[in-house]
Image 1 (cartoon, helix red, strand yellow):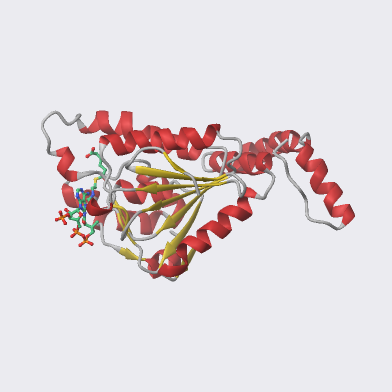
Image 2 (tube, rainbow, N blue to C red):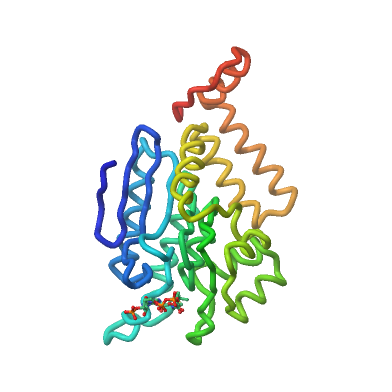
Length: 265
Ligand code: T3D
């Protein structure tokens, strides 16, 4: 599997399967996010967006953690950017890039996801956790507020009451509890996580890319739309999907009783 990109974020491209795997790669610091790492992650997201052979993305962590959030040692270094600047200029672009990526992102949550690491997990389209994973908002423990979209994602994913508990108490949530409250979609044994995530990503990559991109767009918009707006937006997107060759191919495959071969056109 070809491996490219910077040291702090590994990018593995499997063009044949249409899957890219982005691995946060500072395992000794539990993949805590430094400035270069945030730059590498944003560059990696832009790269997989441009690469037309890639139809689905996996985001995971090297070693025993998914991501421990902001590197707290770096934050104490002289010359560190003010917090608001760091969030606006380095974290928010990553979250916007993830949600705006017209390709699904499968979060393979291999270990602890804390602070902005939990936000990265929440920004994924599909979350699969290893049974060794855990989540912690953690921001409050260092006197900060949840950022990188955490206050927006969390109530929408787990509901207002649980979001308030998690954000205010900062207690860790086990993989089992994350599944129970809907923070992840499935939990698998640690040894099976990579295979499970790869399988889900490959299935997504075999789908009709434009329909999947438009579905992601509709789901993003639905979080802020009322029903009338959602109905109208679905009608608009359905017009677009209906004009694709993949729609014609899906219909033909159904009539021929064969699997479709989607090309992304
Ligand atoms: O720019 C800004 O500051 C604004 C943005 C903020 C966004 C945020 O993410 S704020 C929240 C930052 N994250 C945290 O507060 C989490 C801090 N880490 C922990 O609470 C714990 O490490 C964990 C619960 C994640 C895991 O605990 P455990 O016991 O499994 O591991 P450990 O022993 O604490 O950590 C192992 C190593 O990773 C250790 O290094 P050492 O002593 O072996 O050299 C530890 O210092 C390092 N590490 C873990 N988290 C971070 C980290 N190093 C730097 N930054 C970290 N966030």
